[in-house]
Length: 246
Ligand SMILES: Cc1ncc(COP(=O)(O)O)c(C=O)c1O
Image (tube, rainbow, N blue to C red; front, side):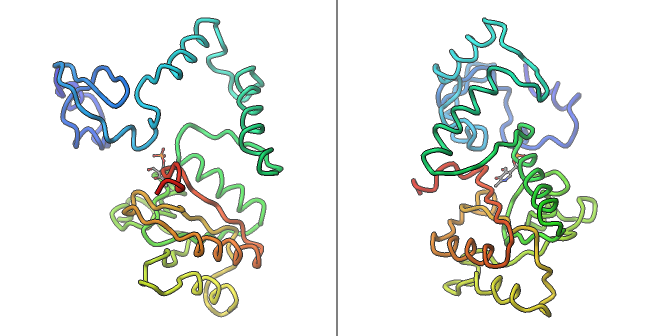
């Protein structure tokens, strides 16, 4: 078995297959094995989504048990035992210890779905269309998220535009200069050309943009500027799992 089938039958839009020219078969922990039995140490880990490893025994056993007892496989947005238990766990582990009075919105299973949902909610809630994003930001590949993404690679005319989005310098973009001052100044000046946005969106650690870590002080200033101007702050931590460890 080789890549001929992929070349012949899969659309040319495929991406990572061009960087990993083999057919993977099984995986366990940090290792993947291809169809020829060659083993690869997997530093990619599903772009950071497999932090417990491939087929982690606890995850695997839970999935097997769920299927074994005929747990609901597809429930649209009906109530299921699985969803109820997940909500209880989120409330118990995340919300209550932090005193957060939040609700959960289940989006599709991709990062870009979450970004689209957050931006849509912010626009609806604030009744404003503009969004501020940052240089080198990456927020996904659907149309709304692409508009927030900085990299020109994704912005030839066939990919769409930056409509209703202004990009401002991320932390460190101008060396030691505190770039939060630019956001503050522009929001305070009704002639700056920047409409009051519905939201500011940022990654606390930019991943695709080159592993750039925003300082805690900068993040706190951006949060406080947003608060002062009644602007929502959307934190896209889809790729950055745990900034405490950086
Ligand atoms: C910060 C950030 N936001 C959104 C996305 C989009 O996630 P997905 O590819 O699952 O749509 C990514 C993907 O790398 C990301 O790094």
